[in-house]
Length: 481
Image: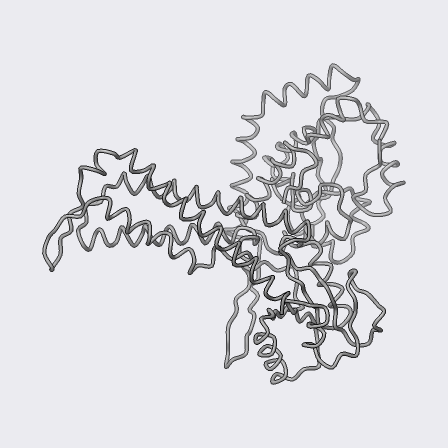
């Protein structure tokens, strides 16, 4: 089938390009290391001592063996597959794991075989090689995601399940367009042929799921909800799709859970998905608070000249106080005073609040072209400089560097049950929804992102959000993802 062959072709091409780039990266890292350790490399030897006797190896032989041992396992780790390349931190983590394993094995072999490999040689090659390999994946990831935004290098996907689940998964696929799943059809009972879901045709009355996949030329089938198939029929469907080269994916109805909280266990051939609980308490809470204290204190010192310059600009360009204080709702519904550099005219709080509520058909909606914002205030807001005093809130403990955005009391009163869970963690200066679209997201989208953060917090997530925040602030209007 041509559509399946087309998918296989671009997947192979992508993997082969990364394979070649990996080889160049490893070769370059070892070549630079050779130049830095020129005398030891060309004139030194590695002595091998064991029960089989003693002999010397030249560094060129050791380097060649290290290159093969380093380059080859990257394929076994599937770090070059397009599905992995587009998946967040996964390709980077696999490169680090493979490199650590290889060099750890070399260190162990050096001890057991009494190899006298220069430490400087290894300590130079390893970080340089890791940096180059990570750069390859960063470039490949950006290229792949850019092509997919243009509808290239995508998986033609058929969704199979009831309407509600199909609509939900289709919407998630739209948000996660980096994964490359383009919905080309939906096979769901109880809907006429002329209906559409997520701009894809609904296929009703087809003799089988396989026929529906062939009709829309899908190279991937995702089971998204309850389907009247027995275990034997479901197994047979997997066989039939596999014979035709069509990928088969089963999407659980549980959403908003990070892969780090999931554990797949096969019990007598039945796959069970275990979901770990996440509690922001004890050591985790202490670690986050320690990070907030150190991070906010460091940033206050580093940004002191900038904050002083902003304070002078605010004071000299408009009447009123330099700092603006406003009550917000924080952890578990407790109010606190948030600090900002004043960006509006003095005594404009009441007028601004009315303007916001007049345009608040959805929460998070900002009043367009607020005339109360001062000229210098527009600059401060554009680059988020008005929010720098919130570092004092973080240092004092009422906020965190990363977390859901704090809202006013009248906004919190409109929270539904899902949104209430945002209050289970401290509000943050930045968060997932800020770096995923700034103020352009809908209320439902922002709640989903904040809930994902609350349910799946980790130190790595905080670091990633902070890195994306810097990019979004430095280059306003860019996609921080």
